[in-house]
Length: 232
DNA sequence: GCGACAG
DNA sequence: ATCTTGTCGC
Image (tube, rainbow, N blue to C red; front, side, top):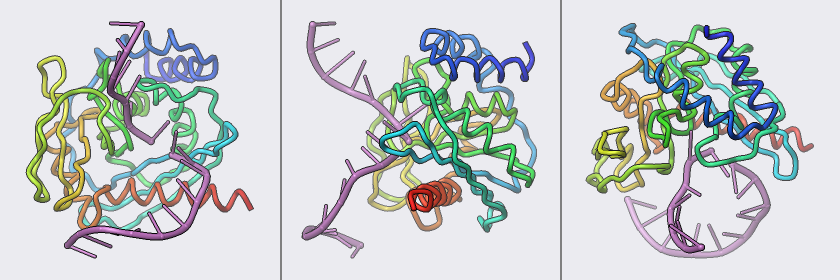
């Protein structure tokens, strides 16, 4: 089963809203996750996020490309799309994935790394949205969620840069990372083809001023802007 | 059965 | 996630 087939299979499941197949798909691909880390130097980081329209199935996906480590905006793209899948904890990728795939086709700059607003391997089946999309798009990726999905952790120290292990099934699946002094930590986990230590380092460097990494924060702004502009 | 539960 | 005003704190 090559990448193209996996992607088509994934999109089919999303369209059919096949919850059972979705879970089986995650169990099947988790053997390919997190993949072997790519040592290549990271120059361009792409943050991704989606905003939703309250009463419809419309979604607004945005990508914000930043040079690294200076974090300058290199390119930004956003699209309007539709989603069939509802939000179900553990199956987020099936709701947001199709729009992400469509969006990525419009991004022209070379991507070295994706940062997703959600979990990587810190997931019940080791297949959070960052891991799944990293695999399907064949790009290194990091999961950076605002809240926890699974696992236990001890509160990290209150200063920026402090972190604590996120433990699940007796394994370290990620870290609760303080990206600013005295703010709630974010949950960082390996997505695809990158190590945890490097992930933490990168996320921290993407937060020179705010709790949320600049690429994701910017993508979030973009998707919300597209939504508000659309409603007029 | 009960509680938890990314966005 | 989205719906929303004021409000507490650096």
